Image (cartoon, rainbow, N blue to C red; front, top):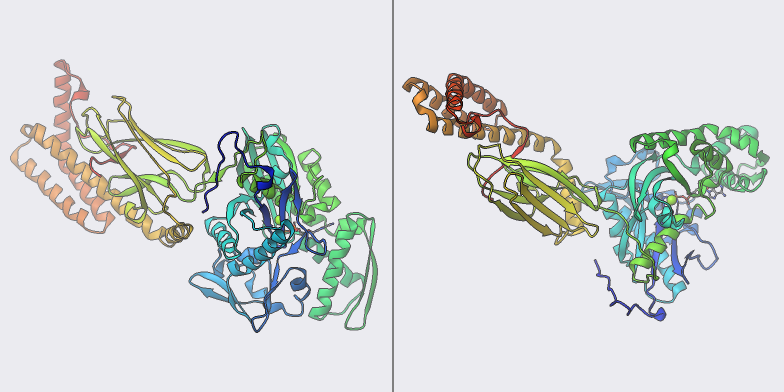
Length: 637
Ligand code: ADP
Ligand code: MG
């Protein structure tokens, strides 16, 4: 990633040094590019004055460059196999993740777990298809702004996982764009409405696009947006409203089954009627079909509202769920932002207003708000900051952060996708009696074993007063600041001894490596769990052996020779079981050790009570302790 330059105080860039940066809404149905001109976000239109670019790419034979946008969309019925739409649904996805792929006209193939589409111009990955769209927008922006872009903010749905985000970044790179940041779509919309300068509180972003519905609940606190929950329906959007009108036309005009081309013509009529109805009470529907039939109908708002009522209600269910997930009710919501071309429909505006018991924010173009917010953010990140602008936006950490516990196991402290800044603490304890130092090994990754994760830092905490294993209380705190910098500190609560380290978790890790680590963890979920369980049993067994050994050393006089040898035999069996791969063998052998030492433990208890009566405290005497909840950490790294 390119480093952004920061001017010295009072030396900020002169106006003519304004850096060209854009915001891009890479949508499922439509994409847009916007920029900040004279302090205002504006969408950059094409040479025909059209702001939207349909997210459709048509591949052609013989090295003819692909067509992107309206031209491709118009050819969809003609050349469905080579005309790819809604490619956003395939980003960062494997073939088997793609729903309804049988009903799509594409020739899919699987390549190393990732989906591709065979076209006349060769096999294309979703990243390549998206790159065509991004390239078209980059060229549009550069032509309009008259220079090279320093970078772009590209928006992604809030629920996009790392693979999907990574794919988006890869597409940008391929399109010759430097990504200043990926920004969540709902956050971009909220920025477009200036909510980052508004009252703190909870905002809902209702986004009904062409084929997808997303609801996001954001919390604004001290100028920072945090995504509290997301929800929606990936198979519900404006297209479904077109489909309802289409069915109505078939019925009203009493049409026979249609050819694919005629169906396409009528679907286009249906969409035009839908869009016309947002401004008018009645829409004419006229078409001459290839079959010779003529359609001449009028669709009224009343009928349209009636035939789409169930679709409207269907969007409210996920809204309720998202609020529930965030632990909130409708009354907690300060404002509602409308996003997506389909929210222009009056019945949607009404339903959302009624549900939230307030007028939704809708005075910006709903299909532009995401791009407008992204442009504002890009302008800021490029360094064109106006005086008084102070923005801080939340990012998430891409991989979990944790530390090593006994047995080479990872204890996750901050799970991946946590929004930053974030701080989490957990208590740990010692493994051996008299242990005065612990080794803290900070790791990054999703796997259960340290050996499969990435080592970030090691440090030691010394000065722990000698105590029985498991008695010390060491509080380890992980803190990631707004710039992604991680600090880990450890503090012994008895002595107050402290140690800490600071690292940059992403340092030296490419986005590809992050994606690979995530893929690995998914592939190993099951055997990782088994390996972890085995390791845990081994650690417990080792702890038991250490405890018995230390008890034998101190109180051998309480035992007769044959009891001692029975204990030794049980320990030897346990040690043998620990070398194997069977968790059950280990637990059985541990049970046997406990049986062999039962009498011994009782005698030691008696002895310690006698000693206590003789003026000493029980605490000073190590008894074989109950296992504790705290995780144990070793002395040496
Ligand atoms: P996406 O985010 O999926 O790329 P958009 O936000 O561009 O999609 O929304 C596209 C949808 O909005 C399409 O279904 C389109 O028909 C619909 N739409 C656009 N304008 C209007 C309008 N005036 N009335 C109703 N629907 C509209
Ligand atoms: Mg959208």
